Image 1 (cartoon, rainbow, N blue to C red):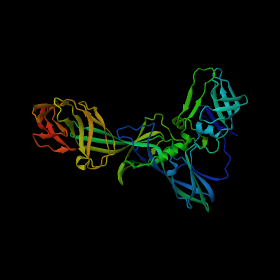
Image 2: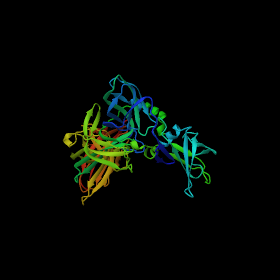
Image 3: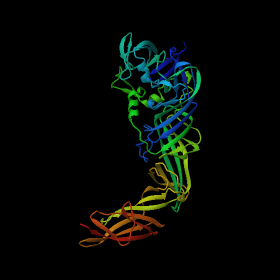
Image 4: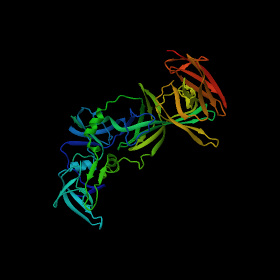
Amino acid sequence: MRRLRAMIPGLVVALAAAPAAAQTIVTSPNPDHVEVTIYRAPHRDAGTPINLEWLDGYALISETRRVTIPAGESDIRFEGVAGGIIPQSAIVTGFPEGIVERNRDAYLLSPDTLLDRSLGRRVHLRRTSRATGAVAEQDAIIRSGAGGAVVLQTQAGFEALRCTGQAETLVYDQVPPGLSARPTLSVRARSSRAVSATVTLSYLANGFDWQANYIANLSPDGSRVELFAWLTLASTDETSFRNADAQAVAGRLNRAQADREEEDDDDEYYRPLTLNCWPQGTIGFPTRVLNSAEVRLQGTIHTEDFINNLPQVMDDESNIIVTASRARQENLGDVKLYRIPEPVTVAANSQKQVAFLDQPEVRAQLVYRDRIETSSDGAEYTPTRMLVTRNRTEEGLGIPLPAGTVQLFVAADDGRPLLLGEAMIRDLAVGEDVEIEIGEAVGVTAEVVETESRRHHEDHRLTVTNDHAVPIRYEAEFVVDENERFRPREPLPSRHGRPLWAVTVPANGTVTIEYRLTQTD
């Protein structure tokens, strides 16, 4: 028998063909067509970047496969499903006579599951001398699982793996039954005759997320914005979905968490392999933990049959694949769907950016805003710069805007872009105000002084100074104490239930407003 050896840290497996099972097994290695719909992490704030170490969104994946179903009862194995599949969410349609049961084959080849499934089996222990390089091999029986130190029994007695100070490797003659090199969902079907059928498999999977990223270029006079946006799709799943119809859903959907808790309890694939010992000739207690990411990216063992089908993992998770396709927005009830019009590859452990918005002429305005305590005598304020527009076609928008981050740039005198600030926006429907906070103003100040004090009232003056060479728009919301009556010298409208003073401050100039506070108690 020719052995196929696949190396992982401390482990080698020599693969041999497993004996045929009595049950008829039909394997579908890959989908013929796949759709991936990604839902944003429901509890992640729009201003919080995607955490590639922990994607808390999910995806609805729909696969179409052509399978040949033999007469009688058979197991149909769908290989290459998402590793984060939630098995109880799976819906399988297209079998002429239905299915009997479904199972997720969650036990992937990994250091953890390979050891657990080999408990009590005979393996080969290979030792390499660090001093001379001499290699010695002997039979051993695995007597403990991967939950702690791996205990082996040899002719010399019992010992723990990697505790001799030598380089040690386990060699397996074959893969134990029940382990799969790719995430697999299987169903049991019955058919009165042999038939070919087109089967649709749909399921939810964890380990996905998406984000909107806006780039806004402000015109020199501050009256227009060139707005561009990327749709960033992220996946930490080990399965790549090639030539997929991809889309993203904006809006918050209610989703129970019971599915994840059940999955974490049952999914031994995500348990780390921990090796603890005190090697001979060393001082201390070294511990080596192979976490789930290492098992996924480095420790999966595979045979020649599916080496060519492994997902292509990016060397640097921070790399982003950019596609020229542009997403289209569609209504989906109370949420919005952004559909990528061309097939794309949602690659394993990667990000992909798709352009979904390009609005070259958005009418906007820079506004300097303050919130003024009416009785704050002698207080000085530094307003906040805001970029303000409305999500209407009249302003050059008029499309739903998903929540995300905004980077605002302006061109310097030499034409180079300069970053003015970074902010976030929430999900904005058509017709809503768009207000982007840029940061504290420079060269614009406001001061409140008391001009007169009597027994039952006080008079105050708010003065705004503009050191810029151009006029600015200034807005102040007055915060009035519940025991005071606010009486400005000129009528004021209100916003958010507070009096609002909106004024244009001339270049290198000042403006003032006077008001009286009367005690009401």
